[in-house]
Amino acid sequence: MSETEQFDLDAYLERIGWQGGRQAGPETLRGVHLAHALSLPFENLDPLSGRAPSLVPGDLMAKMVHGPRGGYCYEHNTLMWLALEALGFRVGGLAARVVLGAPTPWSRPRTHMMLRVEVPGEPEPYLADVGFGASGSLLVAVPLVTGTAFEGGGRRHRLMPLSHEGPLELLELQAYDRRQQDWVGQYAFTLEPFAAPDYEVFNWHVGTNPRSPFTRRPYLQRTTAERHLALDGDLLTETRADGTVTERKLANEAEVRRVVAEEFGITVPGGLCLLG
Image 1 (tube, rainbow, N blue to C red):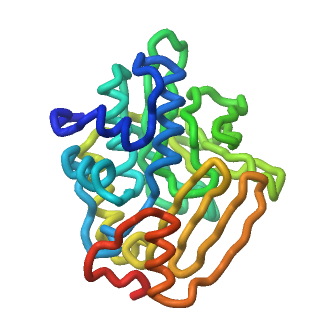
Image 2 (tube, one colour):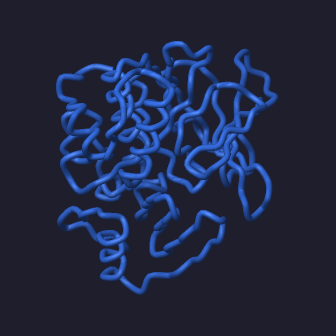
Image 3 (cartoon, rainbow, N blue to C red):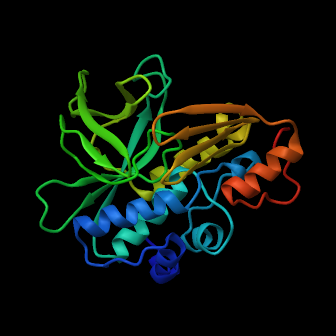
């Protein structure tokens, strides 16, 4: 990851409220990951405006750290990449196919960004991902080992191998759904490394393609210790920590804008109509 001179670690840690240690160890990784996930919302207002978001570190700082905005996976995980490298971790990029809500693991292209993090003294690398916009997203980084359930931030996850014909092991991140009382696949990936230019291409495609869901309607997520809040178009969904889900249709543009400001803490760019 280049252009780290535009990244301000102190400002980032202040933005996410992290006051813990800065030594490159598992507690720092888990703590910073959780603090980021609970502080910075997921949102797609730039693609909805007709442009792919900038992944330049200085622009991410201005938008997400100094500004009242969030971002989607490429922005969140690029920012996390910069922060973890500044803290002394070795970080690499990964990419996945989202399987949540898909008929098969092969129904969607491999466009979701995650991170592979090497932790000094730990035998296995970790999976870090602060940019998956779903109630089953990781709140805490987990070791890249299969068959073991991990708990963090009130959620349970595990990595399971999937059978396929490729030369690399295919892993599926699964989240435990309290309502269904079952494991639900979130995304599938191999450990093939990806670099910043790959994400620039993914970002442009997802952020500008008229067939992308992110260019057609507002999609926002915010997680707190008590609940997960999601806005999909004019549908507001709240998932409580105990798994209870409530849904509410918002009446009009004015109510959507009010919810975006008050519940998600996001300032809508001038001239953007959220409901088309």
